[in-house]
Length: 147
Image (cartoon, rainbow, N blue to C red):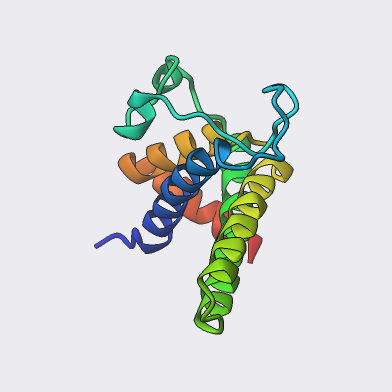
């Protein structure tokens, strides 16, 4: 049986991250009013919420290089999540927990970007890895090569 644990965790984290960031995009009165100046909000279309790729991304081929970038981002995102879980367990204050989650979400987006992918592309690749056995095997190889 294939091990989807790491991939599932990543997708769940990404969905949680998108939900939190969308909720926060309208809550911060200090946030820039110009949408071009805001880099932390990631709009989600109804198709993305249902798990279906938007804007024809399903038809776009995913290169070996993009899978490698996703593996790099996944490794960093997993580390960020583990650190977040430890910090949340040590914090009883709900406001502090919220701040930790927001910072972790921002760090996860930056991890995808520093690997060379925007958040939507990373999410799309992870969905494909989860649904395509051949792509999953390639992804697992890339993860192993990063160890």
